[in-house]
Amino acid sequence: MILYPAIDLYEGRVVRLRQGDYDRLTAYGDDPVAQARLFAEAGCTWLHVVDLEGTRAGEPRHLHLLPALAETGLSIQYGGGLRSREALSSALRAGATRVMAGSLLVRDMTGAARLFDQWGEAIVAAVDVRDGAVAFGGWIEQSDLDPKGFLEKLLSLGARRFLVTSVARDGTGQGPDIELYRSLLATSPSAALIAAGGVASVEDLLSLRDLGLEGAVAGRSLYEGILSLVEALEALGRPC
Image (cartoon, rainbow, N blue to C red; front, side):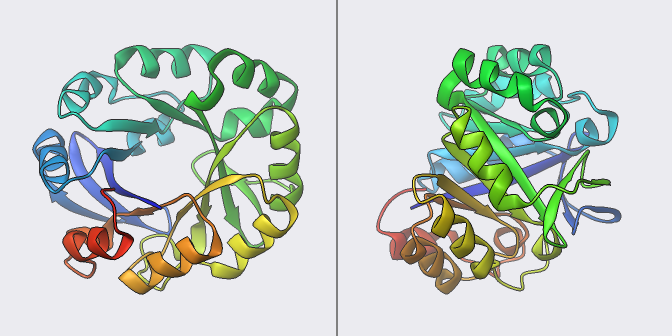
């Protein structure tokens, strides 16, 4: 299983939110590229980057950082405000290896197949779950879409990899929503799932690995020393 260390960007800083709430923003540094280098030096191969300003604005605001982030040698999984084909294309051209699409898929399911046809596995479908339904628009808007049905539909349209975030667990350190992931894999066993929200211990990571997830995102727990990156990599038996 791959551990994805996370860098959330706001006004050029490395930050984290709690449950997507901008009023509960904590800053962890002013140099995201330096932070990315630290992850690379620790043995990581992937970096999960979320443009929080872009999420609020509905268009990316930190694409200018992608070339420098990519120069660290890390493969970049980038999202936040990518709500058009042009935005997805711009992020890939700027240096992202994968781009995350969420709101775009919710709002235009008919166009989703074209995205997967054009970019294949470079597109990660973001499935943000709150109160049993799919949230979108930076978690401000709530759909009536059932996560299991949404994921199954996207699979049928060509999606393979999914970032599944439990909004209620995001930034809390309360542990991942194991039951959510178990239920999704029960109905869509071929889906490659990346868990986000609540990961705070090696035990959390091992539970997700044993369940069959492809990866997990960790942010606040790494920055606050709750989760040791070295211990996590050793436990998983591979670089992140």
